[in-house]
Length: 151
Image (cartoon, rainbow, N blue to C red; front, top):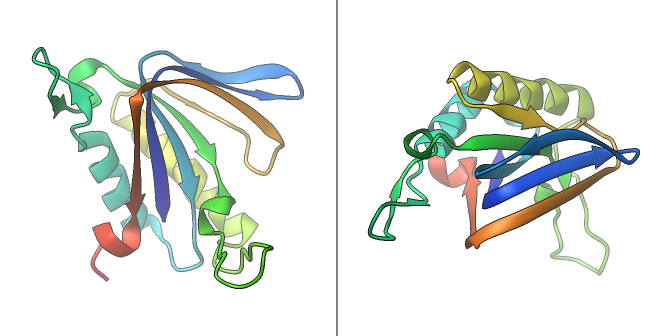
């Protein structure tokens, strides 16, 4: 599983011209799922993401987690996080999870983040989405389960 986190002042997602998810201060999270991912991996990634200290404290140091700042989450499915660009000029997505399984894990991530008490908004799996954000920093971090979760 790969998570691309962007610290934002605000973010929203539209489908067919209508806003379906919108947050204020928090994290815009793009979720990529591979065929080898499961709920145990997702749980470890969710734990890492929600506890990651990437928000500023009173001294301007990145020392606070989303929980510490009442951060909100906008979670978007993003299979292209598994793009393999090593050969040729057209990315291969063979490592991305099959849609049914990937959607199940994507929905699981959304529900588990919400269960932790965070305001949680989301996109629509497989839809053509338009994502808008005001990046705070800018501050962008990539979490990869191959590095976070020792298999």
